[in-house]
Length: 125
Image 1: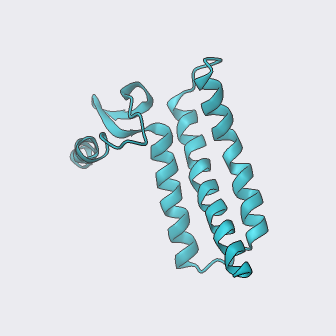
Image 2: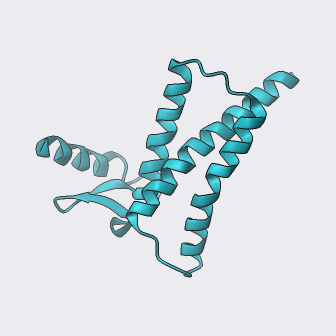
């Protein structure tokens, strides 16, 4: 198991570290045996939950109505916005645990919002 994690972290640095939409700061990234993951903790949670949310809705063919999707998605964006914004202003320093949690919520929220918008537009067209 340790070898697998080591390989994942090594590959993440090779392919994800140059990703332009994430600062990938080591102090805000997950680490294992001195190796840092290629994305920050918040982006790791966001992309993981976003991909899983898309897969779950596709595999189980969940009938998501536009309005509840947008409302729930918007609500799930709030904790990440508060955490990121207060940290940006220097009011407090977040932890990687909180970044992962808010990232997970952000990923689900973004997908729900996008699905709500797409379904709303498909009813209009």
